[in-house]
Length: 266
Image 1 (tube, rainbow, N blue to C red):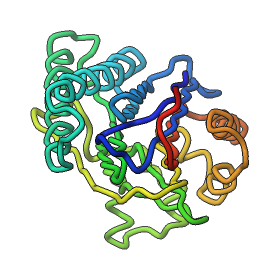
Image 2: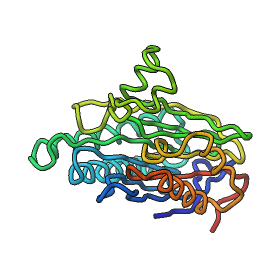
Image 3: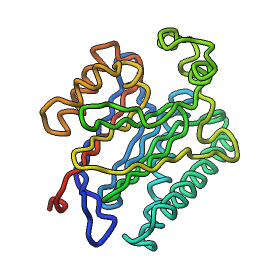
């Protein structure tokens, strides 16, 4: 699953964005409960990792991705290219609220879907800025000037234990609580999309991923793979392949976005 294109959020953009995306069932699961979508025209990337059994997980992640995208697209059609970052933030939270309510209601209305939920990570790529939002333990990383940085902080019990000093970083790698999230869509009537804004620079490489990638590929290996001198879609394929080679214990999803100087490709 791939999409290549560019984002233009102003009449005189300084940066354009190229995208690649890929999702894979992995080596251990029978069904893919991840979902993702990239819309280059909106500069929007959305990725979700569902939970609640394969049927519920698949439904929750698909609803999150499609509804967030649809809501943001409706807003964008009215707001146009000139909307300031603070307005984009409100639009992303509104889109998340709409999707959260729909997932919760679907779970309550259908016994087979009861208890379903999903994580979410998204980014709105602008000519000079990137707005990153997340719920749960799906992540966003950035490779810049030969340094890989995790831009999101997991909403998880493991992260809480790390922050409190209850476990070490080494213990966190094998923590039995590493998959227990403390925030998810479709579980409560309200959910907060944690958002942060980042300055965009030429050659920045952003990576959105589910924990099926981040749990299977350590940061040092992520750094090496993201630095490979290959096309963006090949990078995505390499990341998924290595996650599978390392065990592939979960579904694997990744979105890559690279900033470049110049206009959008035709």
